[in-house]
Image: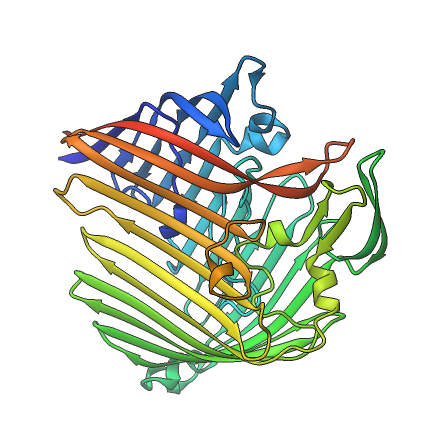
Amino acid sequence: MKKFLLILLFLPFTAYSQFNEYPRPDQGIIAGGLGINWIDGEMYYSIGFRPEISFLNFGVGLDLRLDVNKDGIRKENFNEFSDYMSIIRYVRYGLKNDPLYVKLGALDYHTLGHGSIMYRYNNSPSYDVRKIGLVLDIDFGPFGFESIYSKFGEAGVMGLRGFVRPLQYTSAAEIPVIGMVEIGLSYAADFDEFSGVVNGIFDPATKKFNITDDESPMTVIGADIGLPILNTSMLDVEIYYDYAKILGFGGGSAAGIILDFNSLGLLTAQAKLERRFNGNNYFPSYFNSLYEIEKFKVDTSSANPSFMSKANLLKNATDMSDGFYGELGINVIGLFDILGSYQRLDKNPDSGILHLGAQIAPDNVPFVVRAGYDKINIKDEKDLVKLDDRSYLFFETGYKPVEYILVSLVYNWTFTPVRDTDDKIISYEPIKRIEPRISFIYPFEFGE
């Protein structure tokens, strides 16, 4: 017998894909419905349809979302060609770290190698701007590669890491530990026209930004070596060293350890601790979760509009210091997933970068809690919890009054694009969305 899960949501479905969960093989999810959505205090009637299905190693997910009021469909729902394409949320084969992994669609929290160049990169951090990208990873055993392209139809981020396990070509291939030593070379660049803006002038009359000093494309190259020092059924341990260089700017390195723990499939945990050695004019993990938001922003709210760009901040980062990065993820099957990471540099007070995610949905318990939070350039404890243009927040809490019905409330602090007269995105500004939901959940089985 095959299992098929049917979910009908009477309000639009939004998922925080932090944990990259998919239906199990030969299962599916159909989600959709009608409801009310408040976006920055303005009410919209909402329509959502989000089915997913997995068959063997293949998976497909769709995502149609509409917000409608008296003026018609909200403009940002379908403002550009990629919005229509993004109805296909993903098509995939395999999973990350499989010998073959292919994914077309939204790319959530993608990492190259150990993450010194690209770590948890998100090609669609804005609810209103959904991009179609491609990930292709192939591991042939002795060698392989990881690759990413962030958005079809326009210039975007491209990344490639090739790796080789040189001892696999020799008689030392069977030697424990050193036989699997891995050496990698990485390249990543952003070909977007605003990726390397260092200086320019914004014209309020035309809402256009005229670039006067440009370092595009922003390009990072790197090399790494990894050594798995322990590989058992319960515990894997790897140590590594990375070096990265931002062309035209500075470079840095990182040394770290990764531990994977698996207790008979009931409890899994991953921990990562990294010491970062940063030169001037260098940011570790340059392509991060909020990169698409922070790489270029124009403040059009003031009489004298100003701009900020990651390239400009990089150029002025002349007093960088070393620091630590730590990450811990815990999964208890049937109970909860929790993931947290944090960066802090020794002498830079605004260097904090936080990533949190949690999903608490115990079996046979009538409540659900899901949350995700990203924050960059954290200065102190008060700044840590302040929602602004450096923050992304998703939170959902719900209760099941009966077995097949979930009543929940979703709060989403996200971003919406600011466009010039040519309909080109020149910035993002924060918005909040509040979504009450009523969900009907009904599992059933069908024969082969």
